[in-house]
Each structure stands twice: as structure tokens, then as C-alpha cells.
Image (cartoon, rainbow, N blue to C red; front, side, top):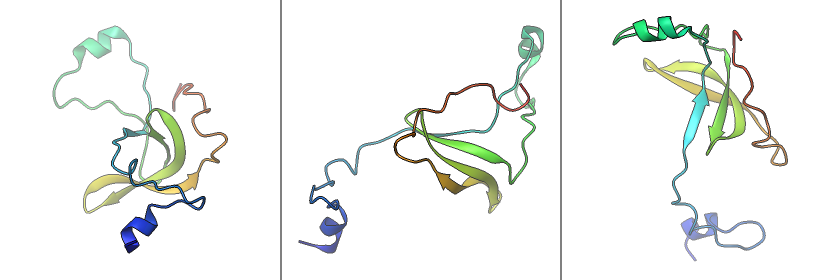
Length: 104
């Protein structure tokens, strides 16, 4: 067995290599904003919708629409990203309600 194949074996001896290439959707909820329809219809290319978030603010990380972690907004080489600061316990992952976002 190679080192790579050992990395794909779980603690109970199950080979995980068959699932390691399965694609998942990863998303981060930056915020929400309520807008009257008249304001929404006025939006165009280049317009900014303020989400009242800044670097360092907490965000929620979702995998396939299930919340799995919390993080903070960061800027790395001019690009926006997140730093994971808390993993959700496995028993509660995905059970957090979507609920209202910031400013609601």
C-alpha cells in the first residue's frame, strides 16, 4: 500500500478513495439585504449592494447547503477569502436554520 492509499483509509479500516473525488458545492453566506422591488429593479451592472460586512466579520461555511463551519472574512493577495475558526460538531452540522441575515 502506498502512502497516498494509507491516507484514504479511515480509522475503522474503510477505504475512502472512492469518495474523495466526489464534487461538492461549497458556499459562504456573506450576508443578506432586504430591498423594495423598486430598488431591486434600479440595480444595474456595477451597482453595489451593501451587506454591512467588513474583513474580520464572522461568516458561515456551507457544504451542499449544510452549515459545517464558521469563519472570518480575510483578504489574501487582494482576494476575498475566509479563515475557518470553528468546525460545527458532526451531530449538529446542517441543523442550523438559515434564518434572517445581518441587518434583518
